[in-house]
Each structure stands twice: as C-alpha cells, then as structure tokens.
Length: 324
Image 1: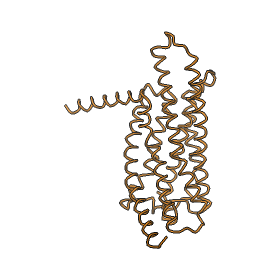
Image 2: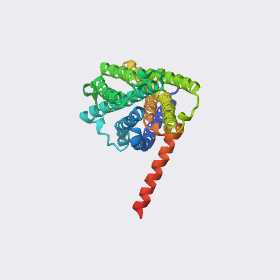
Image 3: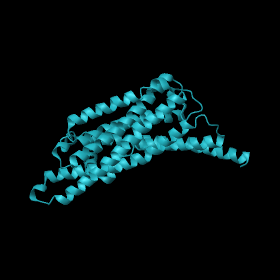
Image 4: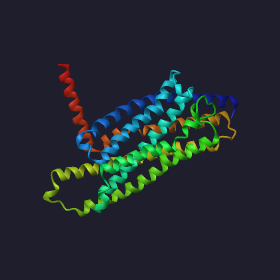
C-alpha cells in the first residue's frame, strides 16, 4: 500500500471516529435519558414497589442514567473542548470510578433480577420465598459496595492527559490497565452474562413446565391471572435485555483486553487508527445497552406498554389542566 493511500485511509478513519463519537454520543445520551427517566417513573408506581424484579429494574434504570452521563457526557463536552476529566486528575479519577461502579451495579442488578425471576417461577416454596424485598435490598447494597471495592483502584490508576491510550483519562501503566480490563471483563460482562444466561434459560424452562401443568380454572382468572401475566412479561422483557446486554458488552471487553495485551507492541499509524475506531464503536455500543431498556420493555411487554400509555395520558391531562 502506497504512503499516500495509507495517509488517506488514516485520515478518513480519524474523521469517521470523530464524527461517530460526536453524533452517536449525543443520540445515545438523549434517547437513553428519555428511556431511563420513563422507566423510573413507571417502575416507581405503587403497584410495582412490592415486586422485587420491578425494584431491580427501577434501580438499574437509575444506575443506567448515572452510567450514561458519567461515561458519555465527557465525550459531548470534548466536542467543545470542555472535557475537564481529560486534564483534571481529580475529575478523571472520580469519573472513572463512577462509570465502573454504575455500569457494574446495573449489570448485577439485572443479574439479580434474573435470579429473582427464576425463584418466582420455581415450584419449590423455599425458592419462591427468596423473592422478597428484604433480600432484594441486601443484594443491591452488596452490588454497589462490591463494585466500589473492586474499582477503588481507579483513584490510583487513572490519570488524565494520556496520549497513547484509547481514552485521554485512562490507566497509567500496564499493571493498572491489566487489572482494570480483567476486573471489568469478569465483574461487568462475563460473570453476570453467564449467570443471567443460565438462570434465564432455567426460568424459561420453569415457565414452560408451569404453563403445561396448570389447567385453567375459575380461580385463575381476575387478579391472580393478571399477576401471573405481569410476572411472565417481566421474564420476557428480562430475557431480551440479557441477550442484547451480552451482545453489546462482550466486544468492548475483548477489545480492551486486546489493547492492553498489545500495549508494548509497535503499531503502524493505520493499525492504530483501525483499533481506535473499533474501540470507540464498541464503547458506544456498550453504553447503548444502558439506553435501550425502555424501548425493549415497550416492544416486548404489553403490560409495560399499557402502563406507559397510562402514564402518557396522565401527563397529558395534567398538561392540559395546567394550560387552562
């Protein structure tokens, strides 16, 4: 490949990477904010506050909002050269810590929700009894505390003003990056994904057994049937989210490990440009997983969709009353 052609390709890749970061970051942040805020409003309704799975969804949406703003807002600010985390050490470390804790907590809250749905779908009364709010609160606290302990190293490892790294605010040396990539790959992606897939599959099997074994009677109508329908749709919504969460987050985890393992390998400018484009793309896809739950729930759950429409009509009435 000629030098002129190589230079042209590098220039094109650089422009594509910059424009992708500019527009996709804003779009993901915008739609993610709208979706997560609506999730919070819907799952905060009184009828959902006693459902452990809905409580997990509620706090996962809050964690998703925090992850989106701590992870993508700096990219939007960088467009206007206003990203303080790129130059200020304190903001850099704090932002990295919040990103990792919020993303990990969100992932584990969905993991716990999967386990909760498995428990509620079991015939064993002891397992069903594990689905309760007291246990839910303990697990949520555990998720935040354990995430904070795992990624406390960011206050030492992360430094701003880095040049040869995927992000300006990043791990300062090989040891820091290696620990961070392995910890994030395991705690944020692989372990939660494996647990979610296992319990998700087991839940589907349990639901199938229940559907085939329960004969319709007069007692299955009314409130009881409605609750069962809600539980089934929560499972359906959760399964779809698990699949997409796994698909969107695994590429970034692999790319991070690859970049760290080849940190000391000499690379051409073209190879660096390609790797940077891949990293930025996978980074955006990873954060897209925190912005899409509302749209997944709306498409896959009729109960959730109906509640959203009720919320929309309620807000519309309030707006009309306020206008007059």
